[in-house]
Image 1 (spheres, one colour):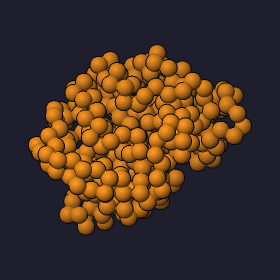
Image 2 (tube, one colour; image 1 turned 90 degrees about the vertical axis):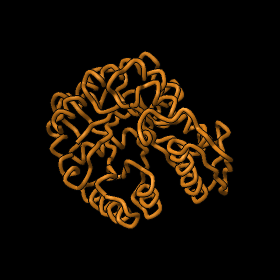
Image 3 (spheres, helix red, strand yellow; image 1 turned 90 degrees about the horizontal axis):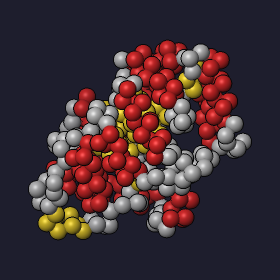
Image 4 (cartoon, helix red, strand yellow; image 1 turned 30 degrees about the horizontal axis):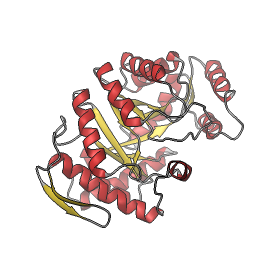
Length: 314
């Protein structure tokens, strides 16, 4: 199972912290460093958000092996031609190490604050399907027309093409509902499924396999991943102390508090070897890549612990 470090970039992560996180992740030989694509704080950390794609473009020449990407970029933020060109550009800057997670967007508050349109969920789902088609065709085709409900493109020649062929990996995700798995089977390289339990992961894998078969695609070519928020430490006591230090920075209503409590209840708190044992049950149900959220932005030791987890799962 491959391990990616996931950072909630809207929580005041500074540029020096980004550099240190990327260097530590590469030293730990993690599969990648991904970040959220938000402009407004969610979890209660102060300091705001550096732009996701500007950050990734800046980190690309500072790293050599680390894969970089978003989980996920909302379709409400950017025109599909723009995101296609941005990702292709960062793919060149990184030498072919970029990935794009694309989603409907969900955080209404940041749309209101920033003036982004926030149509109903059904319309955002339709926007996602249309954007995915345009992005993938922009990467792969030499010239095409598109006439859809939201976007019209005439004789589009998006150049330069990405370094990765036929395109940078595209990640979609959700709860493995019929629409999202059908879209993933048609276009995506990876599906990031919400999986609270191994049984959830198994049900998602079955839905993805069925969607691939309906689309005439080998299910083995569609990677399944999930995201977790473990509480890692060198020992049980160290994990508890790290959780205490983290929560002391935040108010009582922060979502992180609930995430820490769930990790402790679900066996995802403690030394990396213990957490790895829990994750092997997810691997048995089809998960081959796990995104590990790290809220301890300022402690390189937290990244080293994720590296230990990766070695346990290798």
